[in-house]
Image 1 (tube, rainbow, N blue to C red):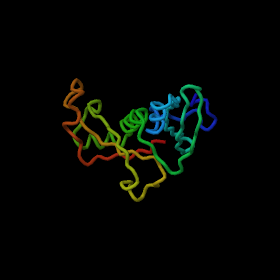
Image 2: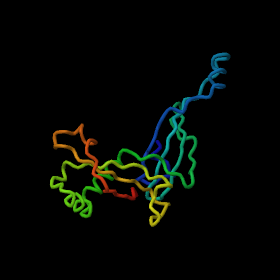
Image 3: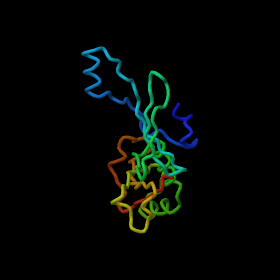
Image 4: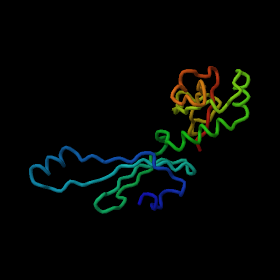
Length: 165
């Protein structure tokens, strides 16, 4: 039902959906008087094409969106799809590939890239702070089979800044 809300484009992402916990007062009212407790979900939505973040509340009983609020200037946490897209984007970049080769890495399939949120304080000064930026840190797995050992060998001095939009 959130996807059907006219507030968002088709490319909006549900970054977070969780139970909207009832207040202590509502729970006490239920215990004392049997007053029905509203069952709600809380969601954070990022509409990247529109560069907007929303918070929404959904009534689980009525199965309808009861609140939608645009949060001006907010950036939610990085969604799993953005993690995947960021790594793919960096690994396809010819400059990044060349930087690996300059460091003696010939098998780029062993490399992995983890994006971290840049926030506002760590965006390089020459980059627009209104962007949704990730800082891609690169690591090298000892072999293609060693998926669990990827963080043992960080690739020093190789930083990729990616606009997630």
